[in-house]
Length: 306
View 1: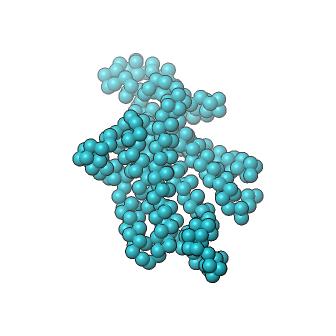
View 2: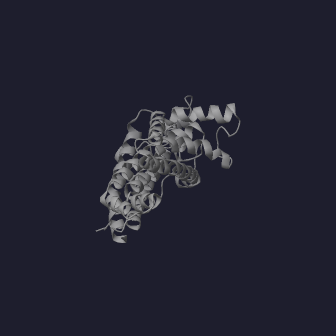
View 3: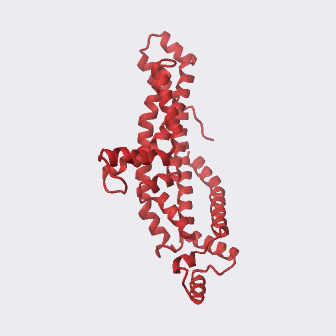
């Protein structure tokens, strides 16, 4: 098991390097000068040249790239141009907020998607199945950038029940987590429904029913347990998506996480900070995939990792 996970991690290293290289090239190719944004349009040419030299931005692109790789090999992510602080310290301050939001959104997603999917499969073709289908269609049709403001208008402005933005307490998690989890819950519901329908039509389920087992035992002890592999797969992918795709939601709710920090780094042309954010998101995604592989063998003993 450990050897397999270590091999998977080694295979992910080239992907991480490719992501970092592409981000490095893109942020340097896109027009814009971070030095001019830091000093303003009225800065003297001498001041601009001096700051550019102190930041190493006057060096050739390959020299900047080599320096970045050397710093990364020593665990140094560089200095933020916008905040004038080490990138590693900024990421450690912001990452817990994104993790908290992602975990809560995943709980909402699983709490809605798994029961709804099991119910739809159990009541296939009936009113409950059709109602779940309408819910999934709405969840997939309404994007985050539309659902977030709608929830703010309803629960914050009209009813005054929840805070509009920020990370000020337990209630501040409700709206951003619901916004993130709604669309993913719709996807998970469809996946659970499909996996459960496939298992419920299997021979072993018909045998269990023929033996006189209760419907609840057949549904959860047999069918649901064997359908966990695709469910764990989609949950793992969705958690990685939550970490990487919370940019819009964090911006809407002014959430002090990695997603909003990435937007700020792009707007200010903060090369080191943007590269650090992308690296953290990519490493998180790889870790989640490794954890998903581990859960495969724990949940289903039929899985044999070579």
